[in-house]
Amino acid sequence: MKMISRISKFFELTGRAFTLLQRNNPLLISGATAFFTVFSLPPIIILLGNILSKIIFRTEVITEKIYDQLDSIFGEATTNTVIQIVENFQSMASNRWITAGGILFLIFVSTTLFNVIQQAIHRMWRIRTTSSNNFMYRLRHRGISLLIIILAGILVLVTAISETVIAVMKDYLSEFLPDTIELLSKPASIIISLIVYSLWFAGLFRYLPGARMPVKYTLQGGLFTAVLFSLGKLILTTFLITDRFGAIFGASASILLLMLFIFYSSMLVYFGAAFTFVLLKNSGKELPVRKHSERYKITSGG
Image 1 (spheres, helix red, strand yellow):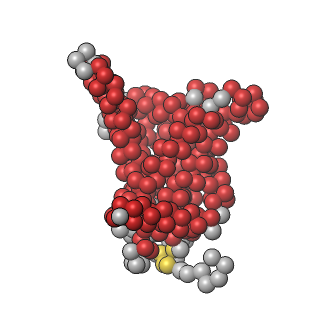
Image 2 (cartoon, one colour):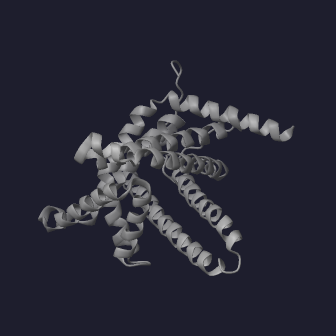
Image 3 (spheres, rainbow, N blue to C red):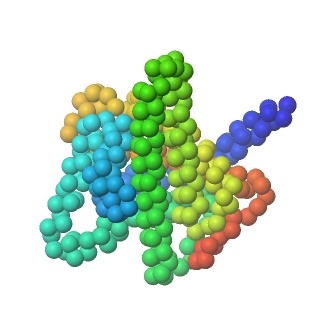
């Protein structure tokens, strides 16, 4: 009975989260996120390569791992398009005005995406910024966005390394326990991916908005979003990477495929953000806000 009650409560909270998402124009916020992601992705890849190469691997190794992840989702054609755009960005370094700004230009472009995501989450969580014109606030927000980008890069590398370790262990142990290893390797890979996604989404919900969402709810919301994202990724990669897509849209198919995937993925992320907020409200607690932010209520129409 207790288990049935918990399952029933979960579906009730999920329904409330879906209603909250519907009230906040998910098509608009997901479309804006997809649009800005296309422009932010190349600078993000360049930044991750430059920053993480100072800490762990060479730039080439880091970008290769990122491209491998993109290839597993979008296929070779779209990944090659992204690589070409990144190379075009890098060639712009020969222009004086970008060379002078250099890293600042890349940071500005890449972190603009997270400003869009922050505003979308603020809309659902009913909070707003009171000092958006404050220079130190904007600088701090850009810094947090950059740290979230770096965390994403580190987690991508952790996933890639984990998959390599699993593959090596699979090859080694398959001689002794062939059936068992074959049975366990796929679930192990899925669990690692879920942990990585959960941590990143939890970090996003905890630190990006102008609110102090309790860790308990960010972890639960992060896991919920990770499961949604993983299922969505499986479905989208199954149905979107087809020759027909390229035949219909021609040369623009790669970018459109990228935007379409990000659009639907963004909707799942915002669903997760709504679920996180509903978890907090279900506990009867108010959402603590950070400095330069405040809660607000909608008195009518939602």
